Image (cartoon, rainbow, N blue to C red; front, top):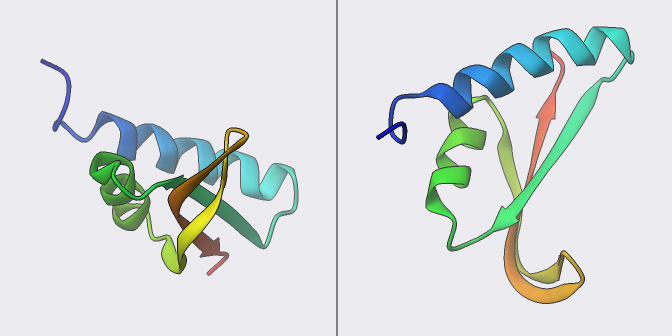
Length: 73
């Protein structure tokens, strides 16, 4: 009942807005399995840009993944 309401995007945005200046980060990476379309959408809506799609390690297993990067404005 809570999916599709933008809560994950809102939470990620609030977290990044707080943590990036505190840790003096110029960029943050995001990774998810390619089939997790909800996570892909959250990362894209949060301003992340896809930099890789293909096979890679995800939680100790070879999986089809997507890597994203968010650069400080």
